Length: 158
Image 1 (tube, rainbow, N blue to C red):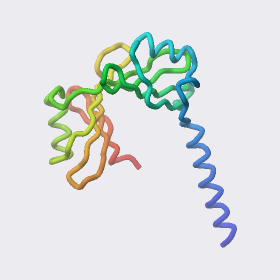
Image 2 (cartoon, rainbow, N blue to C red; image 1 turned 180 degrees about the vertical axis):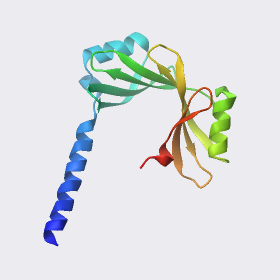
Image 3 (tube, rainbow, N blue to C red; image 1 turned 45 degrees about the horizontal axis):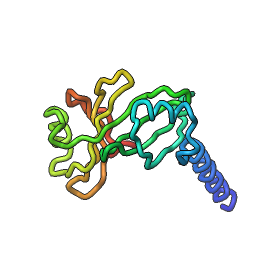
């Protein structure tokens, strides 16, 4: 029985160590110059709130949450300084009807809390990331394409 517990503890430790390695919080002074230059070129008035360094496939990506002129933003910038995508906070009234319809049909009576318009490098909207509280008080994040197709739903992730 003891060897089984040891194996479980070891497995848990390895999972936590891998997760910690896959995503590390960094301070603004730890962000590489190329990444910071790309952020400031696109968002000259950015005030950084949180930054994490993540490994996505073969790329190291800096996920930077910031505010600019009172509005919430987020940018994913690769270590080489190329911007993968960025998100801008928008009001619920600015959601396209098909997106709102998809969210409301999946989560009736939910309260929309935070809505971020996702823009790909090509500066064309690729979708909407919506954080909501369901009728049974659970927080869920969904990503919906501009045509209303549900792309991601955190409640279905295992």
